[in-house]
Structures are given as C-alpha cells and as structure tokens.
Length: 170
Image (tube, rainbow, N blue to C red):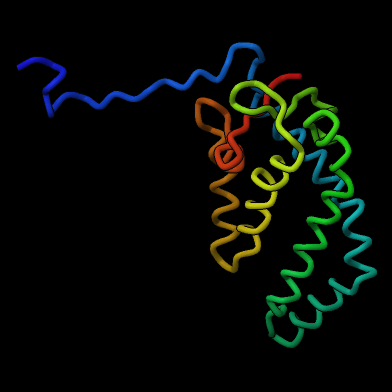
C-alpha cells in the first residue's frame, strides 16, 4: 500500500510562514508593555471610577451582601473601553503600538508583517476580549486562557489569533 492512500498515516498540516522580515517580540517584552499600559490605564481610570461613584456602589453592595447589578458592570466596561481608546487611539493609529509597546519597541502587525488598519485592530483585537471579559463567571476564565496562549511557539495570545496579528520587534 502506498503512503498517499494509507488511511493510517499521520496527518499532514501546512506550516504557516509568519514572515522573516521581523523578529517576534518576546514574552517578557509583551508582559512589560502590558504592565505599562495597565499602569497608564489605572492612573486615568481610577479617578474616573472614584468620581463616578463606582467604588461607593461596590462597597454598598458588599456591605449589604448583594452583587453589583450587571448593567452597572456593563456600563463601567464601556467606560473602560472609551478610556482605553482615548489613551491608546493615537499610538495605535499612528504606529500600531500602544504606549507600552512604544516604550518596549514592539508593534502589532498582520501575519504577513504588514500594518493593519486601526479599525481592524480595535474591532478584532481589543473589542472581542473586552466583551468576553464582561461575561459573568466565564469571562475571567476566558481572559486567562487568552493570555496563557502566549506560551505557544508563535507567542500569539487569543486576541492575536482572533485578529490575525502578531507582535514583532519594531
């Protein structure tokens, strides 16, 4: 029996060439960029949350043994996305980098190594994971899985897989 028609042979998979024009960003670089972006986000968002009464609502719910209404969580998720866009829109549009990625000299590109449109970055890379993160119970679990996918050989997280992106050294 020849190997081509053998139903018991090992399956074959196409090897995807991620391009050799730029080196993939390391996991440490991506983590450091995410930490910088998180710190920037917290510096801006925490005062907004304080002035908007979010912390008072949380404390009230905790002291009465109730949960925060899901509509309130959704509202603050949208506010968080708007703040993210206010902070990161310029560098994402100009160079496909967040501020943290700029500091670490890495950038987001398509699998072909080309720069992606700003709308695609937001609609496919950031918006889906923001939405998933707001799902009760399942959201935090999926958010962790998203990040843990970085341990794949191609260093791509779940949001990279959804958007067809990779992070490379700039």
